[in-house]
Figure 1 (tube, rainbow, N blue to C red):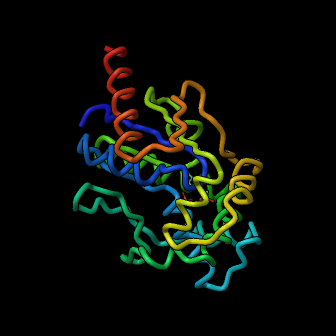
Figure 2 (cartoon, helix red, strand yellow; figure 1 turned 45 degrees about the vertical axis):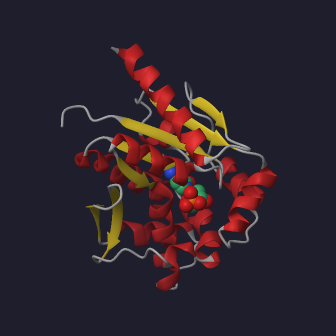
Length: 219
Ligand code: DC
C-alpha cells in the first residue's frame, strides 16, 4: 500500500481512546494499534524479570535486549500485537501492578525511542488507527488526522470502575503529562473531543466525520 493513512488518537486515561479507536478501525477497516499495551507489555516483562520499573537504566537495558515481534491479528477488526518470545500477554498487562509500574517505564527516554521505532513499523500492515499519548506529537507528527480525547475526571473514574479497575487516574495523567520525554499533550492541529456524556457510537461517529472532512479537504 502506498502512503498508508494514520489516524492518531491521543488523550487522558479512560477518555475512551481504546473503545473509540477500535470502533473507528472496524468501521473503516483499518488496523488498530494500542500503544499503551506495548508500554504495559514492557512493564509486565520488567516485573516478571524482577527489574525495578523505577530504575531507568535497568529498564533501558531490558528494552535494548528484548526479543519481540509485531503481528497483525485478524478478528472482528485487525489489530497489531507486540509478541514477547511469540507470546501476547493479553490478561497479564491489565493488572494493578502493571498499571502502577507502566508510567515509570514509559518515562524512560530510551524506551520511548524504541517504542517510536516499533510503532512506526506498524505502517507495514496498512492504514492505521493508533491510540496512545504521543502519537500525534511524536510518533506520527506528520499525519493530518489527529484527535485528542478527554472527559471529566468523575466520568473517567466511573468508566474505570465499571471495568472493575480501581486506580488513581489523576495521578497517572499527572505523571504522563509531567515527564520530560514525549509528555502527554494536545497535538498541534488535533481535533479536541470531550466525550463526557456521549456513547462510544456518538464519539466514534464524530471522529469518522471529522476524519472524512479532513481527508476531503486534503484532496
Ligand atoms: O492507555 P494505557 O492506560 O494502556 O497506557 C498505559 C501507560 O502507558 C500510560 O501510563 C501512559 C503510557 N503510554 C505512553 O506514555 N505513551 C503512549 N503512546 C501510550 C501509553
